[in-house]
Image (cartoon, rainbow, N blue to C red; front, side, top):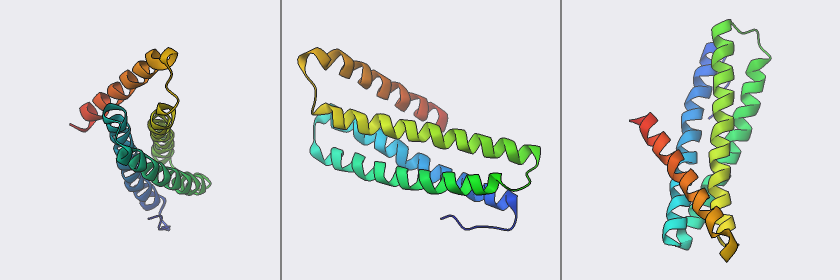
Length: 136
């Protein structure tokens, strides 16, 4: 997954490919989280946990890889790409954290928290719409 290249542009290209892989897991986690909340089926809980593990692993490896690239002499455009990929990694990790929070907190829903859960569901729906819009 993280094959080091002598060329910085190849390394950044690999990082961008791995970012797409990370995004795929984060989106799947979000979809499974929404399905768990909507249907209450425990199989979706397991899927969210599986995707969270994958996202965390890729996030950690990719961030380390990007920091190694950052230590190289980069052109202005390479710096911009690197910053963009790092920002995207951070954003995808947040999406994954939202997904896991929905399924973990589901067991803690009390009468007074139903409104908060509804707000979480709206937030997830908004993220799904934004992702669908951006990928279409």
